[in-house]
Amino acid sequence: MTTVKTAISLPASLFEQAETLAGEMQISQSFLIEIALEEFIRRRENQQLLEKINAACEAPLSEEEQVLLSKMSRSHRRIVEGEW
Image 1: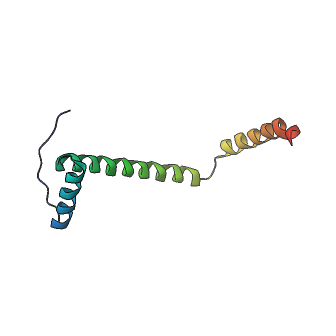
Image 2: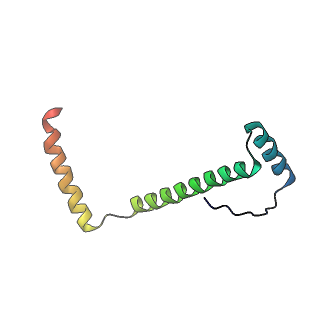
Image 3: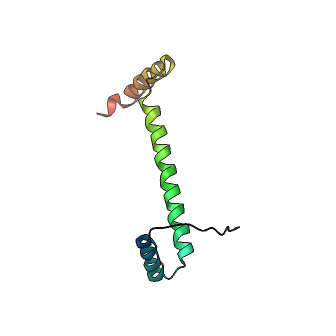
């Protein structure tokens, strides 16, 4: 994997917390920031996916989807009718 060297500005208290945590975990500060950024990106992508799923679920069904849902419901009812 190719790496890129960069400089960032952090509040002093956050830098000190990162420095302490990296020491406790016995990893470099760079690696700590790398894994934290990867986790942040993963969570953001998951949140965006969830928002898209929720938006799709909130959209009203098209006429074609309503017909299909009705057919599926009738078919399911016939399958489980004798089970209860």
